[in-house]
Image (cartoon, rainbow, N blue to C red; front, side, top):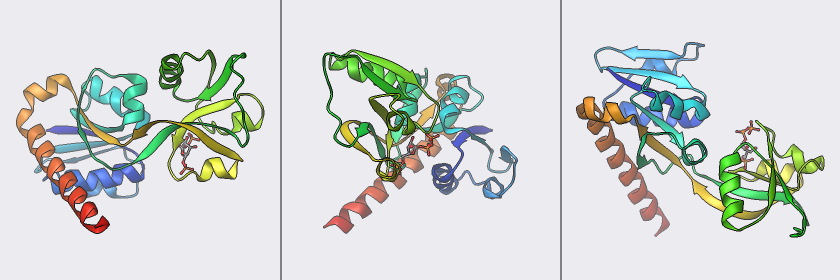
Length: 217
Ligand code: PRP
């Protein structure tokens, strides 16, 4: 039985479709319900829907053999797992944003509100800037609006949340996309199933990329 941790939400549904195409179907998993675990014995697969930021915990601890997590989560928590494949979906970026017209004063400590404290710390340490981290769990955009922080480090996808709160990107830190992660022991003991999934996912990613390139021409 292959245990798969999927991030709840739109990204998870997209990713489920890719796993199903790889031969690990379990249509029940998409049914609207409060159930968190779905199994298809014939296909030899069990899916769990988990909070996106928790996928790496399930995979690291072996409750899931394989899972899909954003690069943001992987860099923030640095789980002890194999990061195997970029699914080239769930794309967004990690960025620094501030109120329109913000000017950094290098003589003061920069107050940074974020859910991604480790990413923010390592980014500012790489540019040698003194900061004070204000760790929040959501609605990060509020902090500079209320004057609680100077900037935020957060995910920007469409930019709508920033725009609607009078903020703008002042620096891009890194691009983000969904990655397949694998438990280290499972990679040895369930190699057959894992390679079957990975092979198909890789082909699907390559086909999608080729199609996108074709459309751009
Ligand atoms: C994320 C992120 C931004 C928003 C960016 O929040 O923290 O707030 O999405 O998306 P956009 O550029 O398309 O507007 P999420 O929805 O995960 O909720 P959160 O407030 O709990 O962080």
